[in-house]
Length: 205
Image (cartoon, rainbow, N blue to C red; front, side):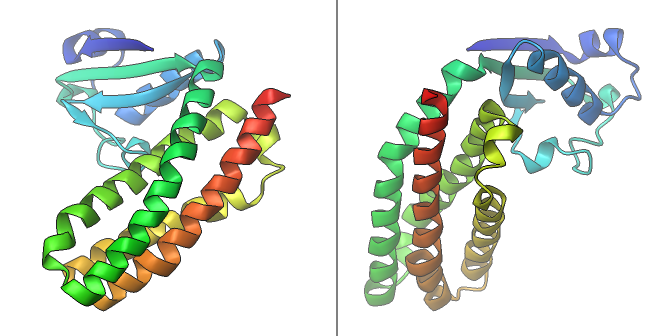
Protein backbone atom coordinates (compact mmCIF):
# COMPACT_ATOMS: atom_id res chain seq x y z
CA UNK A 1 0.00 0.00 0.00
CA UNK A 2 1.28 3.46 -0.94
CA UNK A 3 0.58 6.58 1.11
CA UNK A 4 0.83 9.96 -0.57
CA UNK A 5 0.85 13.14 1.51
CA UNK A 6 0.43 16.56 -0.06
CA UNK A 7 0.32 19.94 1.67
CA UNK A 8 -2.46 22.38 0.90
CA UNK A 9 0.09 24.77 -0.55
CA UNK A 10 1.37 22.14 -2.98
CA UNK A 11 -2.20 21.34 -4.07
CA UNK A 12 -2.84 25.00 -4.78
CA UNK A 13 0.37 25.21 -6.80
CA UNK A 14 -0.93 22.45 -9.08
CA UNK A 15 -4.66 23.25 -9.12
CA UNK A 16 -6.65 26.49 -8.98
CA UNK A 17 -7.27 27.57 -5.33
CA UNK A 18 -11.01 27.87 -6.00
CA UNK A 19 -11.23 24.35 -7.46
CA UNK A 20 -13.40 21.94 -5.47
CA UNK A 21 -11.84 19.03 -3.61
CA UNK A 22 -14.21 16.53 -5.25
CA UNK A 23 -12.68 17.41 -8.63
CA UNK A 24 -9.25 16.54 -7.26
CA UNK A 25 -10.62 13.24 -5.95
CA UNK A 26 -11.98 12.42 -9.41
CA UNK A 27 -8.76 13.25 -11.23
CA UNK A 28 -6.71 11.11 -8.86
CA UNK A 29 -9.14 8.19 -9.19
CA UNK A 30 -8.98 8.41 -12.99
CA UNK A 31 -5.18 8.42 -12.97
CA UNK A 32 -5.05 5.43 -10.63
CA UNK A 33 -7.68 3.48 -12.58
CA UNK A 34 -5.39 3.58 -15.62
CA UNK A 35 -2.80 1.77 -13.48
CA UNK A 36 -5.38 -0.67 -12.06
CA UNK A 37 -5.04 0.93 -8.64
CA UNK A 38 -7.72 2.24 -6.30
CA UNK A 39 -7.92 4.69 -3.41
CA UNK A 40 -8.24 2.94 -0.06
CA UNK A 41 -8.43 6.02 2.16
CA UNK A 42 -8.70 9.80 1.83
CA UNK A 43 -7.62 12.09 4.66
CA UNK A 44 -8.27 15.83 4.53
CA UNK A 45 -7.06 18.15 7.29
CA UNK A 46 -6.40 15.05 9.45
CA UNK A 47 -10.01 13.83 8.97
CA UNK A 48 -10.58 10.38 7.44
CA UNK A 49 -13.37 10.68 4.88
CA UNK A 50 -16.13 8.12 4.51
CA UNK A 51 -17.77 7.34 1.15
CA UNK A 52 -20.50 9.97 1.53
CA UNK A 53 -17.95 12.68 2.34
CA UNK A 54 -16.10 11.99 -0.91
CA UNK A 55 -19.10 12.90 -3.07
CA UNK A 56 -19.55 16.10 -5.05
CA UNK A 57 -22.49 17.15 -2.84
CA UNK A 58 -20.77 16.73 0.54
CA UNK A 59 -19.16 19.39 2.70
CA UNK A 60 -15.70 18.04 1.87
CA UNK A 61 -16.51 17.55 -1.80
CA UNK A 62 -17.50 21.20 -2.07
CA UNK A 63 -14.49 22.42 -0.09
CA UNK A 64 -12.32 24.82 -2.13
CA UNK A 65 -8.61 24.02 -2.12
CA UNK A 66 -7.86 27.28 -0.34
CA UNK A 67 -9.35 25.67 2.80
CA UNK A 68 -7.18 22.54 2.58
CA UNK A 69 -4.23 22.41 4.99
CA UNK A 70 -3.22 18.79 4.36
CA UNK A 71 -4.28 16.07 1.95
CA UNK A 72 -3.38 12.39 2.04
CA UNK A 73 -4.51 9.35 0.10
CA UNK A 74 -3.65 5.65 0.35
CA UNK A 75 -3.62 3.47 -2.72
CA UNK A 76 -3.22 -0.21 -3.47
CA UNK A 77 -3.29 -2.46 -6.50
CA UNK A 78 -6.79 -3.85 -7.03
CA UNK A 79 -5.63 -7.47 -7.34
CA UNK A 80 -3.70 -7.26 -4.07
CA UNK A 81 -6.43 -5.50 -2.12
CA UNK A 82 -9.47 -7.60 -3.00
CA UNK A 83 -8.30 -10.99 -1.60
CA UNK A 84 -7.38 -9.37 1.72
CA UNK A 85 -10.81 -7.75 2.02
CA UNK A 86 -12.55 -11.04 1.26
CA UNK A 87 -10.49 -13.08 3.73
CA UNK A 88 -10.93 -10.54 6.52
CA UNK A 89 -14.68 -10.15 6.21
CA UNK A 90 -15.40 -13.86 5.70
CA UNK A 91 -13.84 -14.33 9.11
CA UNK A 92 -15.45 -11.30 10.78
CA UNK A 93 -19.01 -11.38 9.40
CA UNK A 94 -20.14 -14.52 11.32
CA UNK A 95 -18.79 -12.88 14.49
CA UNK A 96 -20.74 -9.69 13.75
CA UNK A 97 -23.95 -11.65 13.15
CA UNK A 98 -23.55 -13.50 16.45
CA UNK A 99 -22.82 -10.17 18.14
CA UNK A 100 -26.08 -8.73 16.78
CA UNK A 101 -28.11 -11.57 18.30
CA UNK A 102 -26.31 -11.37 21.64
CA UNK A 103 -26.65 -7.59 21.86
CA UNK A 104 -30.36 -7.71 21.07
CA UNK A 105 -30.96 -10.27 23.84
CA UNK A 106 -28.93 -8.31 26.38
CA UNK A 107 -30.69 -5.04 25.55
CA UNK A 108 -34.08 -6.68 26.01
CA UNK A 109 -33.33 -8.48 29.26
CA UNK A 110 -30.55 -6.48 30.93
CA UNK A 111 -31.20 -2.95 29.65
CA UNK A 112 -29.40 -0.89 27.06
CA UNK A 113 -27.12 1.38 29.09
CA UNK A 114 -24.24 -1.05 29.64
CA UNK A 115 -24.43 -2.31 26.06
CA UNK A 116 -23.96 1.09 24.38
CA UNK A 117 -20.16 0.74 23.93
CA UNK A 118 -20.71 -2.60 22.15
CA UNK A 119 -23.48 -1.14 20.01
CA UNK A 120 -21.22 1.76 19.01
CA UNK A 121 -18.44 -0.65 18.03
CA UNK A 122 -20.90 -2.72 15.99
CA UNK A 123 -22.12 0.38 14.13
CA UNK A 124 -18.52 1.43 13.45
CA UNK A 125 -17.69 -2.06 12.12
CA UNK A 126 -20.72 -1.98 9.82
CA UNK A 127 -19.74 1.46 8.54
CA UNK A 128 -16.25 0.13 7.85
CA UNK A 129 -17.79 -2.91 6.12
CA UNK A 130 -19.63 -0.65 3.68
CA UNK A 131 -16.41 1.26 2.92
CA UNK A 132 -14.48 -1.99 2.42
CA UNK A 133 -17.09 -3.39 0.07
CA UNK A 134 -16.99 -0.23 -2.01
CA UNK A 135 -13.27 -0.91 -2.54
CA UNK A 136 -14.07 -4.52 -3.40
CA UNK A 137 -16.68 -3.37 -5.90
CA UNK A 138 -14.07 -1.17 -7.59
CA UNK A 139 -11.66 -4.11 -7.69
CA UNK A 140 -14.16 -6.42 -9.38
CA UNK A 141 -15.38 -3.87 -11.90
CA UNK A 142 -18.84 -3.18 -13.29
CA UNK A 143 -18.91 -6.22 -15.62
CA UNK A 144 -18.57 -8.69 -12.75
CA UNK A 145 -20.99 -6.82 -10.52
CA UNK A 146 -23.63 -6.81 -13.25
CA UNK A 147 -23.94 -10.54 -12.47
CA UNK A 148 -24.73 -9.77 -8.81
CA UNK A 149 -27.70 -7.45 -8.94
CA UNK A 150 -28.39 -7.57 -5.17
CA UNK A 151 -25.20 -5.67 -4.36
CA UNK A 152 -26.60 -2.13 -4.66
CA UNK A 153 -29.79 -3.06 -2.79
CA UNK A 154 -27.83 -4.62 0.07
CA UNK A 155 -25.62 -1.55 0.39
CA UNK A 156 -28.62 0.79 0.47
CA UNK A 157 -30.25 -1.41 3.11
CA UNK A 158 -27.15 -1.36 5.30
CA UNK A 159 -26.84 2.42 5.04
CA UNK A 160 -30.54 2.72 5.99
CA UNK A 161 -30.10 0.35 8.93
CA UNK A 162 -27.14 2.32 10.25
CA UNK A 163 -29.26 5.49 10.23
CA UNK A 164 -32.16 3.66 11.87
CA UNK A 165 -29.94 2.27 14.64
CA UNK A 166 -28.42 5.69 15.36
CA UNK A 167 -31.88 7.30 15.39
CA UNK A 168 -33.26 4.69 17.80
CA UNK A 169 -30.34 5.38 20.15
CA UNK A 170 -30.95 9.12 19.92
CA UNK A 171 -34.66 8.61 20.73
CA UNK A 172 -33.81 6.03 23.44
CA UNK A 173 -36.13 3.54 21.71
CA UNK A 174 -34.16 0.51 22.78
CA UNK A 175 -36.87 -2.01 21.89
CA UNK A 176 -36.62 -0.85 18.29
CA UNK A 177 -32.82 -0.98 18.49
CA UNK A 178 -32.96 -4.60 19.69
CA UNK A 179 -35.34 -5.54 16.85
CA UNK A 180 -33.17 -3.84 14.22
CA UNK A 181 -30.05 -5.59 15.51
CA UNK A 182 -31.57 -9.05 15.76
CA UNK A 183 -33.61 -9.19 12.56
CA UNK A 184 -32.46 -6.54 10.09
CA UNK A 185 -28.73 -6.26 10.75
CA UNK A 186 -28.22 -10.01 10.99
CA UNK A 187 -30.12 -10.58 7.71
CA UNK A 188 -28.16 -7.89 5.87
CA UNK A 189 -24.81 -9.17 7.11
CA UNK A 190 -25.78 -12.65 5.91
CA UNK A 191 -26.31 -11.24 2.42
CA UNK A 192 -22.73 -9.95 2.40
CA UNK A 193 -21.39 -13.42 3.14
CA UNK A 194 -23.02 -14.60 -0.10
CA UNK A 195 -21.54 -11.65 -1.94
CA UNK A 196 -18.05 -12.47 -0.64
CA UNK A 197 -18.44 -16.04 -1.91
CA UNK A 198 -19.39 -14.62 -5.32
CA UNK A 199 -16.43 -12.20 -5.30
CA UNK A 200 -14.03 -14.96 -4.35
CA UNK A 201 -15.16 -17.04 -7.35
CA UNK A 202 -14.74 -14.04 -9.65
CA UNK A 203 -11.17 -13.53 -8.54
CA UNK A 204 -10.32 -17.19 -9.09
CA UNK A 205 -11.41 -17.11 -12.74
